Amino acid sequence: MSGDTEKPLAELRTLVSASKDRVATLQRIADFLRRAGNHRWVGLYDVDHAAGLVKNIVWSGPGAPEYPVFPVTKGLTSAAISNRKSINIGDVAADPRYLTAFGSTRSEIIVPIFDPSGQKVVGTIDVESESPHAFNPSTQSFLESCAEILRPLGSVQ
Image (cartoon, rainbow, N blue to C red):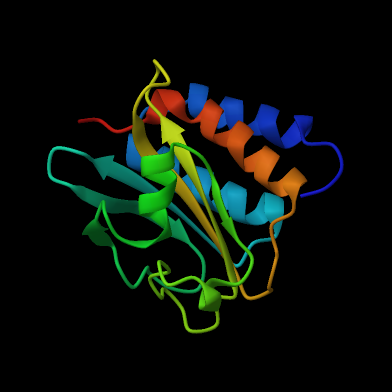
């Protein structure tokens, strides 16, 4: 993501504030994030700490995730949750934590979404690319701003 991000962030705020149906709104948001960043695939996930699971809510891209539900201790998502910060991997083939979603994925970024208090990770934004090192610092910053805006739509648990 490069250039001015204020317009897309304002659009995202409008989507969130107009939310009536959580899943339908999150689908619009996944589609929006995919278009805004010209990304191949975007998924939004809930983190169910009680069950120890990460669950895909919606996705936008060429196919469903290979792992729609997986243990909170697995994958790059585990690192984002336990470290409470974004995980930006430029070469997923070199990272043993990577859970293969698509054979052509070269890079992935996982951005945590926190509860309203900012204490607990209740969800994630997952973006995948066929290009190595696809997510530069401005893209990461944009997605982190998006995660802040998504807090009101955090997990319904």
